Amino acid sequence: GDTDTDQTNANGGDGEEEEYDRYNVETNTYHYFVHYLGWNVKWDRWAEELCIYEDSPSTQELASKIMKEYKSVKPKKKNQKMSIESLNAWMKRRNEIEEDHY
Image (cartoon, rainbow, N blue to C red; front, side):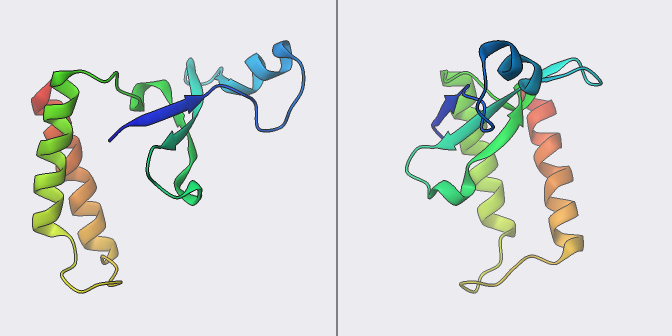
């Protein structure tokens, strides 16, 4: 879905401190604070730049594939949670969809 990134440091501070807080030396990646448009703020999170996709026809197609697949595996009853095994299987399948797409 649509995302809105906010590169502001959640801890406050000057630009140099913010840059340090967002950069992970161990993984050599930046992290961005992501808000999903139309979603409750409780879903906001920090995400590695590798997990953030540019909005394009290709990524919209990928999102559609993922949503279609998820609808086939998500729990049928409202408020029912996936088991750990089901969740792990779903995450593996989602990664496969992403790898196949690119």
